Length: 415
Image 1 (cartoon, rainbow, N blue to C red):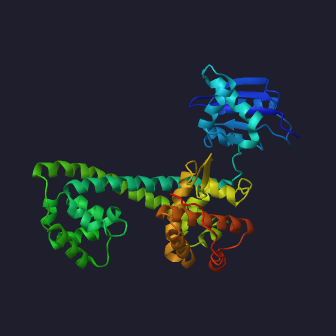
Image 2: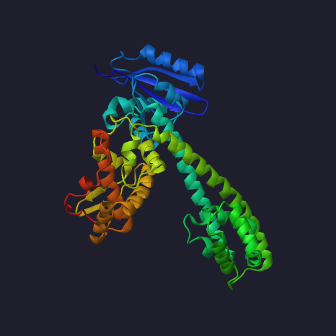
Image 3: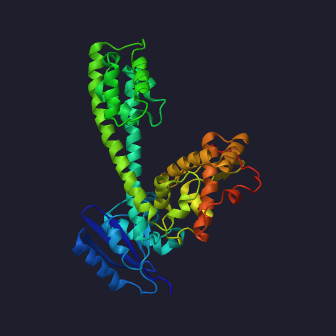
């Protein structure tokens, strides 16, 4: 049965405006409800009063995909459409040229979007509660990793101005300034003058306090040599002032590192319990943490993933063509899932290190003229297509089968 009633909700922090229209565009009802249990109950009663039969439930358009209101709406079978606010703003001019704007009017516009163009929008996926919980944790952990890297960049920029010895001492190591011993030493000696006076005993004590258990003597010798090397210096007053700023950044970096590590453990624990985890970690370069990031964004509601091309476009790995007249350009997508493409670049980088086929594919793309980022994106594009196939057929990744096909003709060069 065709849908005959459409609902639009313009949400705010303390209230929501609701509008319902029929298939002819006639306004059936409009309400302003409070953002609490009573308001949600009134909304559900309104949908039941004007709603369609159970076999054709009333679709709802709203400009967000999360929150208590969305959770309440998802309790039934009604499809929920998360409309991009930029897209909704474009539709607003379609219903009036006066440029006026109001919350009840925006709710009505959202209802009309579904009435006229519902086929052009996709409903929220029917993901399980398990994968939605993984998404909450994985995104929090991804945010913690980004926050940690932002603080590392701030510390690095500050050290370059007055403390280059610390950069030489730690940047060449894995994880660089985020290493526990790097943070411990910088907290102990925030100025190059104090670092130059450190004894081997003090350096060994700092390394032990940071949790290092092996190679302490050799590492202490290396650090003392680096700190005592002759370098340009800021005036003593400047060094002391900047060291106070460094101490604050190091304390923030300590908290960010702890948060990222603790969330990583929780994320991996939840991820390993999901039925799709075995398939995801069978791919080269995907472990518990990175696999959780990917699963959080693609979900387990397979109805949304109509085909592999949609998943590639959603992730931003598939090139997009811009053609007008005699001009034709093939390049990267700007509208994409930023979290998934970030995980995809890390996945491609890790896969190149452990998979001969992935490494050969990357090198082949570089030989054909792709830049580093373009070759990485092309590798991610291929592997996420393989992931789609494996999830649909419930089979594990097979290196020999994945990279035995002959190389196809390369598309236009991508940036």
